[in-house]
Length: 395
Ligand SMILES: C[S@@+](CC[C@H](N)C(=O)[O-])C[C@H]1O[C@@H](n2cnc3c(N)ncnc32)[C@H](O)[C@@H]1O
Image 1 (spheres, rainbow, N blue to C red):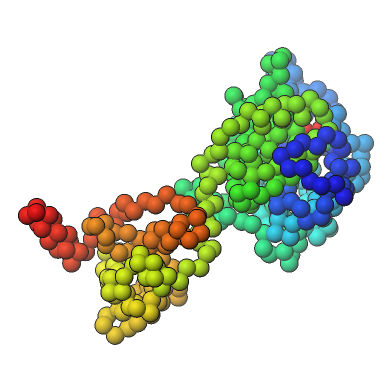
Image 2 (image 1 turned 120 degrees about the horizontal axis):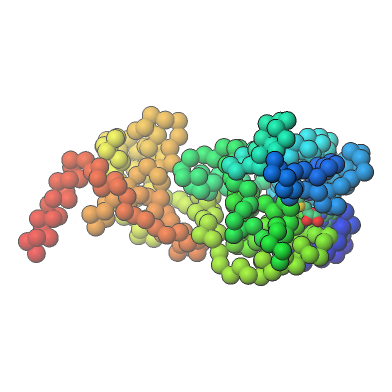
């Protein structure tokens, strides 16, 4: 078995090259295989100009059976190469995605989502014989029903989506303008270059920083380019030298990281269990400190030396338990529920937890303690604030 060379484009036939890769060695596979579009004649617009569609040799197969066998082969190898915590995305159109999906299910892959890429700027149906085809499908699968530990950055994607859970319909335009790579003749360098936004969502949602993403049909290297911008590694396979040269140049020219590259840190923070008492030990919080809720609940509790809170003079429990008691919910993330007032500023416990993680785990997150909680201070806190203000004035 050959050793994997990361951040490298292998030249040749995927069917052959994949066989040489070690088992369970990559974290994510993104495959944009030939679609087998079966385009028989050239297509013309009403003004008689030729449509620049997908009519490449690499997209031609002698029969559906031939195409199916090709897909079975590379999909089988991909399953072997994928780590148990990994997942695979395959993109296709109505021409091939149902055949691909069927093969994947027969190989034991487990479909996690079928994401619809809704093209906001689709090519019209020039013949007027069908609806304008405005979608492609991405099948996102784990290695099987029992492979449940696949990476999925749920919180990160929610943040990326402006605080709302992302749906399986992605509105993204076709790759056009300056992003579209052109040849010397000014024409598209590749007929099916995918938009970077699409790959950004794929890679952000299902890998961690430093992970390895394999793309067995690399084309212009969109997967490699986005992986590099997000601080991930890539392995590409492509059979045509002209595309390899384009991809290599494209990737070499990238010398920056996108801001989202470090977002995963925040997600990691949430996975580390920090006992509340450790914040007391580190003197980030002191015994006797008062914690406050938002004005909606208008409650407070006192920090005890065993890390519990004393609430309403006779109830004790963890920050989570007292939080759920107040909210009357089954559970509560106390870190995101309680505030402490320091230097006249309301600080969420979760931000103090971040401070602790920075010291002990070197996980960095930019802390933003200017929470609008200040606008919602309850009466008692207002008095406290005013007293402090007066004292400051006197001094
Ligand atoms: C649909 S395109 C991928 C486009 C790519 N996602 C991008 O954004 O540029 C498929 C690519 O796979 C390559 N290809 C097709 N069959 C292949 C094979 N058996 N081995 C390696 N590459 C292959 C083609 O040359 C083509 O560039």
